[in-house]
Image (cartoon, rainbow, N blue to C red):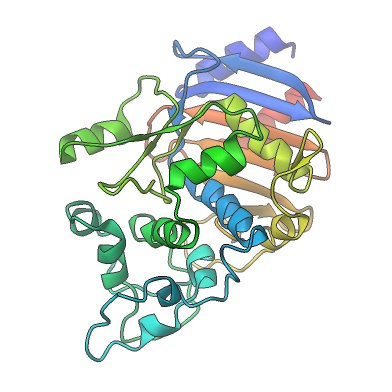
Length: 326
């Protein structure tokens, strides 16, 4: 299959893909755009945002801004008023948040409660803990991860987008990002699900803290640079971005329970696809993916517009895209 045939196949079978970039050995071996997108347009990469935030945490630790991921969450919020009788929250660490092992007093994501509040970090803290204690159960959350943005701000004094611009995006030659603010719940929803191209923006709360569970907009070219930096164990074009030890620790597989995760394991906000080969990925709703395979020195970035319940994007990468290119 030549590259034109591959592009045609993608257009026919992967209807919501907007951009793909494939790097092998640091060299671009395939790229394409569909659905009216240009190469430098951005899509909302959904939960793949979480994996970028993992890298920001690693950078903060490397710089001594965060001492350890075993720090207690409340160490960063000394003025937070603990509710009477609440004990569990006092033992929750950054590690619990990064590995989705933090306990919450809610089922599912409490979007309305958090996003309608004046202080998204405090509202998320109010939901942290509970009577069950620390069970080490996998508990996948999105909106309450806002605590991580709060920690990064308390540790660095920088808004999420400013920290990312300075220490991650600029060294990777990724265009500077700006905050995006929604004026209403309707505008918030439109940002999340609309299919048109976006600029280099990061959805933010009223205090200017970028949402760590979703909300980042990137092009596939941007995402591929992230993947290449991970392949290079934290370096890019000879510059150290994040420590090799963080890349290693970030991708140590941890067991995941539940019927919805297709046998994958989890690291620090990265999905572990094949633990025996150290293949891992950032995965967001609608099939937004940064796929990293150190064994073949390959990084794949797929950017897609909103289409719910796209669960086969990793299968497409491994069973169709990469075999066609080989």
